[in-house]
Length: 253
Image (cartoon, rainbow, N blue to C red; front, side, top):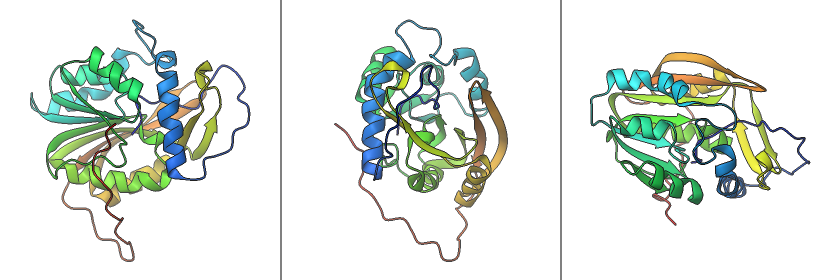
């Protein structure tokens, strides 16, 4: 769903804001928030984000995909943001589709990374055919999806991946759900929802992934967890779990 993502960090105290009452309201905040904050987060011609994320760092995170996926492999970047730096790095080697809920982020991505394909969509509702991709990347984007929709999304990602396909995910480290007004001085409110690292590891295993790597990404004022997971077989059946209702296809403007 969201664009490049980030964490709940700002240079000024935030005024209190009520939590959204529904997932629809939460996603509306994320969409409007990234539309307003896109250039605050990653200014034009900047070499890093406002929080110091550089191309060198994302390149290190992406190394397993570069080492193990063939040239021309199909890769989805969920929450691709403006396309910099990760989508551009992926597009140098793979056939990349970037998905983002923000109209502004997608417009910037199409201009900044013309070699990739971009879809303006809610990442929790977008659909791809089963076994149709070799890699999925979601860097700091799952944390903008309402918590109740995160686990079903991981199940769908597993279905999209071909056997031994890879998921690179940066998710929460500690549980948190909240909003912040005037995020980054953009005038917009932003929404986050995190589970903790242990919960994400369990959700990945329940979805049928093998978690190959789990490391803490330490940052000033916040920490996240990086997971490298491999698709292995079908998701195990869990007694008493009801199937999530099927939702509609890709969301486009």
